[in-house]
Length: 234
Image (tube, rainbow, N blue to C red; front, side, top):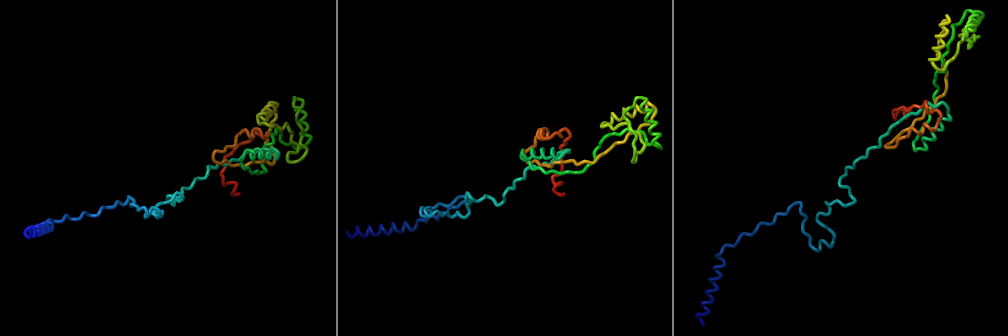
């Protein structure tokens, strides 16, 4: 038995010596953590609702960027309608434009307009001489005449006031055929004319039918493009 015990002791010592004589493997390097991969969470950390990257993550209510795109204002176009020859027509059209959803402003201006084309014979040295010529014209078939009694054209022989220059030209040629030198003068008068300013924005467009039906001056109305700052700066 003693020899068996010694044999077992020697066997254990030999095994212990062999274990320490074998080279131990080198430890593995720590695993590399990627920057864009979130770390693993423990269950205890998940229960608290706190994550290591919570401060860096934007919420749904926060904008992704501080830069906010500015919206462009709608396209603006500015126009003037006119001329209107009476305040009644101007008021009627202004009401129609406002009814269509457009802001409108009314302007009035004193302007000269052509009243007609006057055909006449230049003033004579006396009323007697002018009347003598007028009688000669009457004998030749000219009935529409009169002798101007006073003013800048005193003793002139008026031969008619015409609304169109073509008619005035025909009258002048007829008088010339009779042997007289007729003259033509454009006559003016001052009257108040009315203009309406309005703007269009975006897709809103004022239909032409509005001023065609809202006033009796529709045939003479022009739509003029104007600078949007022109009226505001006056």
